[in-house]
Amino acid sequence: MKDTGKHQGLRNQLVTVLEQKGITDKNVLEAIRKIPRHLFLNSSFEDYAYQDKAFPIGAGQTISQPYTVAFQSQLLEVEKEHKILEIGTGSGYQTAVLCTMGAKVYSVERQNELFKTTSLLLPKLGIRPKLLTFGDGYKGLPNYAPFDSIIVTAGAPIIPKPLMAQLKIGGRLVIPLGEEHQIMTMLIRKNETQFEKHEFGEFRFVPLLENKN
Ligand code: SAH
Figure 1 (tube, rainbow, N blue to C red):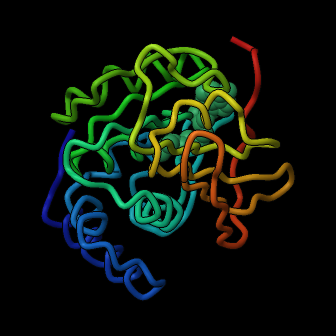
Figure 2 (tube, protein in one colour):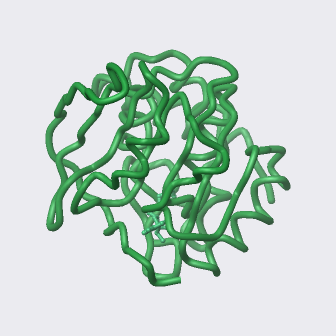
């Protein structure tokens, strides 16, 4: 597993592209500048790692496009020590971005193969989420709730109720909503019963699948 000056140069270029596309959160950009994204892809696809594109990672899943990762991370307004729940660990790249920003990350993945690969990869890169777990993200992680924010990284047909219940007051839930394509949606929890909804245009994700462990 090598990270070279060439890779660093490509990452600097990627950060410039993300800035041009409107990403302004310095901590998000610094995390992307640091994390060796090529090590999250099969080595034969290394050349694609720093293009702003999604890519297959096995088990029919994709590593999200860097812009999408940056956009969702920016919406979370991450602060150091924030406790964040991620649904859809996948390659672990989004997890790595949030950990590098200083968050305490709890992440759920429903594909066992990906769960295992990513659980081995992240510690090798020095990235230590609080918890990586295999399970159905629709249920969230009630034993670890409440969370400062929740990020869903697969296209959800509905907002799972348990996720809303596991959000702190003032917390943010960022979730791409829809079947064919998704509208990036953010709920801010105002109090026990009220959530304020914001929408941010169209994105494309693999589907959030229910109860198929
Ligand atoms: N954050 C990932 C994105 C991976 S794509 C990354 O940066 O690479 C979305 C992931 O969500 C896939 O790995 C898929 O297996 C997972 N997923 C789909 N439905 C799920 C569910 N109900 N619970 C947990 N994970 C789910």
